[in-house]
Image 1 (spheres, helix red, strand yellow):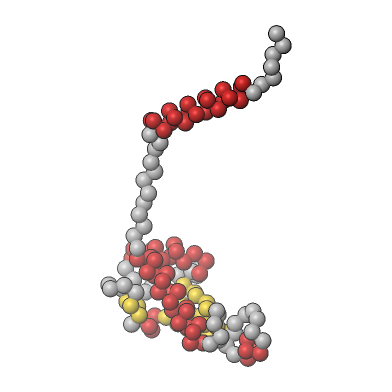
Image 2 (cartoon, rainbow, N blue to C red):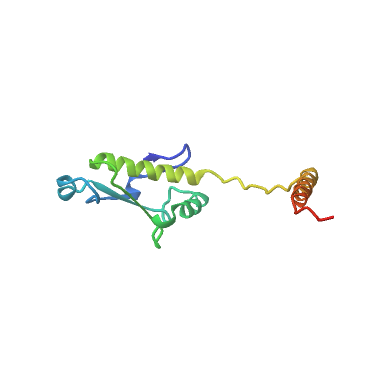
Length: 139
C-alpha cells in the first residue's frame, strides 16, 4: 500500500509500470538500456479514491490523463530504473495529495469609496498639471 494521506492509500496493484528507452543525451546507455519508466494509474476506476478527489485529480492531470481516465506519468530524469521508478511514484503521490486539498474560492473584493475618491482626485490633479504644460497663449 502506498500511503497518500492518513485516510487515503493506494494499492500497488492499481499501478501498472513499464520500462521504456529514455530519449535525449546519454550515449550508449540510452541506446542499450530501458531506464525510463512509465506508470499508469486508472483514476476513474480506482476504489481507493473518494469521488471528490477523483474529480479534482482528473482536472489537475490535464494532458497526462487519457480518454479512458488513465493517468500516465513518464520519468526519465535519472540514469537508473530504480530512481526513475521512485521519481514517477513520488510525482503520482504528490499529484494525488494536491487533489485532496479543497481549493479555497476567492471572493472578489471591491475598492472602498475612499480609495475610489482618492484615485479620481489624483487623476484630476495629474490632468491639471498636463493642461498647464500647454503652449503659452499670445496676449
